[in-house]
Image 1: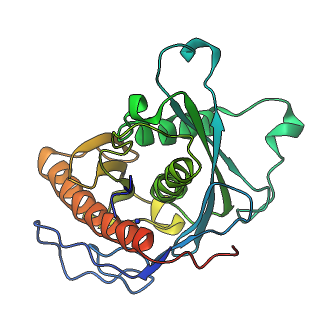
Image 2: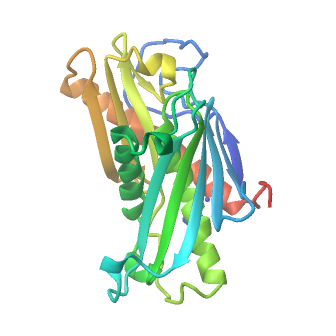
Length: 271
């Protein structure tokens, strides 16, 4: 029995087919407005973790490690349910200039806390905690290099690491129920409006000048988990919102395919 929505390594410069026509614009990196960056998902990247993935969206690289632990937090004990949560962080030199480690500052920043919660919520949307049993899986998502879309890459990679950790739990007898722990896959992608043109999967240079930007989390079956959108410089209308959502749904469909291909292949990481 497998709990994976069939996702070790897959490489693609997948093209998202939008139902909304876009002008023939070529972006700075040569992509069309409706095209993902090259995406690579490498499973088994860490030796010790029950599930691990290095996910790359272009130059953005995020290491996702899943740790499987018997037992649950005190507030879940006796419920018969498991728990899935996530922590997100960036290496000090993941960006152009060094940032201090939050451990040195003595507190977790608001952005870090917000993204950690987003990743956890997104994963729990496709997890049957009853089927997981009283076990905990923690996803640690560490940004090695940031070039836009770190939170969406983290969600996309964390799902694959989670699927591997669940498979590990079954192999080792920690998950004993017959129910499927994963009801679907989940992925995320950024979209935005730049110069009046809706665009998919924004790198940093596009993200900083976008009139509107949005992060969209979608299941493999096409259901929305979360939509985070902000008019950074100019309000957007309903037609623009629909165009952005169309791009995001198509982009996430390609990401779901890459996850399936990754989970169907043999891990090619360090193990």
